[in-house]
Image (cartoon, rainbow, N blue to C red; front, side):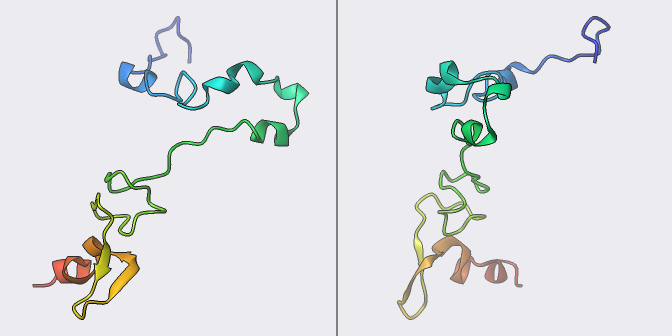
Length: 108
């Protein structure tokens, strides 16, 4: 795209101000002065300086999907499921099982 011809569109302010778009992501500012040119480093050296984005949180409850007992159900307390007999299921979440399961919610 040619900026002089007017075919370039600037990033919206909200996007440009997002850490990691035009500036280093949070926690990565300390390495800015230590980066080397690509010609002078092997891939393994670059890999040591990688900055990863935060983990995905599909349900926006503040708990990353890998740690969330119900990764697609909003459950900010991440409570484990306790079935009708009182047994706790520590790897299953309350808000995606039992009375909150998709089967229970979508039946007539």
